[in-house]
Length: 81
Image (cartoon, rainbow, N blue to C red):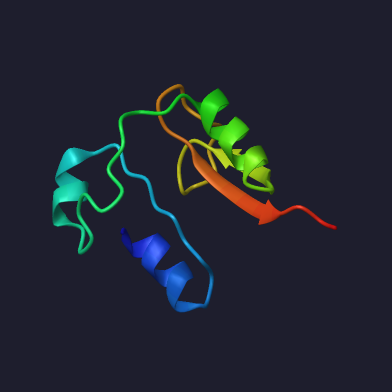
């Protein structure tokens, strides 16, 4: 888990971190814990919906740039009842 995800988790949020850089994954304290092959954004969004979540924002970086073809930062929330 990276610095940003760890900081969010310390604030009490449930965090799932996905990283495409194998070097960063190897340096993570939970390296490989949930390692999966690349998941197209469309499939990711379908899984999010199936899990009862909503994509609030998709960014291409933690600086809030537009989504990239091979990397996204997703902000999710639970669906409202």
